[in-house]
Length: 316
Image (tube, rainbow, N blue to C red; front, top):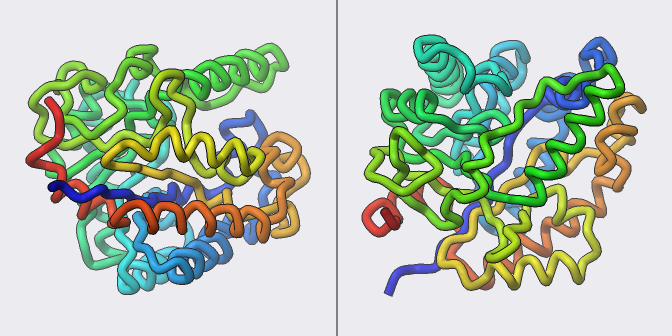
């Protein structure tokens, strides 16, 4: 009988990426704020994982690591402690899928180079900026030899909310640099699958296994860090139970999910990123509880190890 597997992954997006999402100037961030993900969030995340006794996967952005003198050492220490370090691209360009194929390939190559220099190990997994995948980007992941991707996020409520926010920001004259994915993502499989290389949100025979992030059956409501730390606990329990029937549970969060306004984040960004108003201690406690549920119900492994185990059984 196949094991029931779960993975916990964290996107290490530094704060200037949130300024880009919300149409704010990156000049709002002083050097300390720009480095908060590596100086403050990563240590909190490592302590959280260690306290619960589960492994994790960190998706790091090559450019963030290259520009932060201390980030490489932080990633190496995480890797040596058993955390998988995977690629979240080099530039985290939300419009990466709109680039020419050679530019996409170069972005992924640069990310691999930076992350391998930091950890001593080349990444085997990839998550697209903004979760946006297309044929050209999927082809680049195949060319790079990744074992798995984890970009598909077939969450209808998230997609609708994102479209609404982007429209509102445009009307305010403060356009977001985020990109709205193709609506095809809403029909992507909820469970691990081999993508069709020409249409990666459909099943096929692609070489790189896709591990979608957790969404509920039916309405496909996402269970990700932002909701796990801000929704009422009964709502989180309901979402978790709805997903608990899956044989693979891919829980995704962001480093910002363990930060708050008291960490020195500019008020302008806190006003837009409302989850930053929730105390970090409260968010960490909520995540500790959810991680404990996962540990009780599943074998929690890195995404790398999940991909190795699921590679031969993923639906096509």
